[in-house]
Length: 112
Image: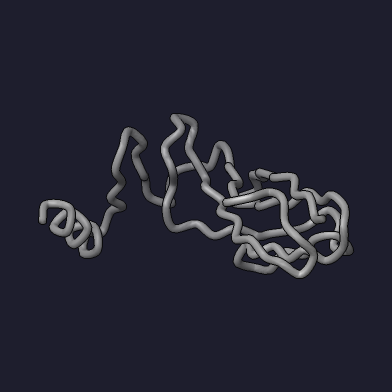
């Protein structure tokens, strides 16, 4: 029941609520790094995986409320849409980048 109350409080709060040791800060903070993560970096042709870009400040706290611009280094191998969903196009390697506030993070994917 306490967990449900915590999630409910997070849903109505104006600031981000996080569990664990990291702290979320609002979008007015300068972005120092962008971390790109995925459930898997190996995908099959015609399969998809959803990437996540997390902007962080100089202290390492996640910044909320910012969106990324996504790009693929090799669109003939892996394409990426505006939400970070990667689709395997053909076997090979590609680097997917996310840019937030002129700071870029990347993740290598292998399509098989």
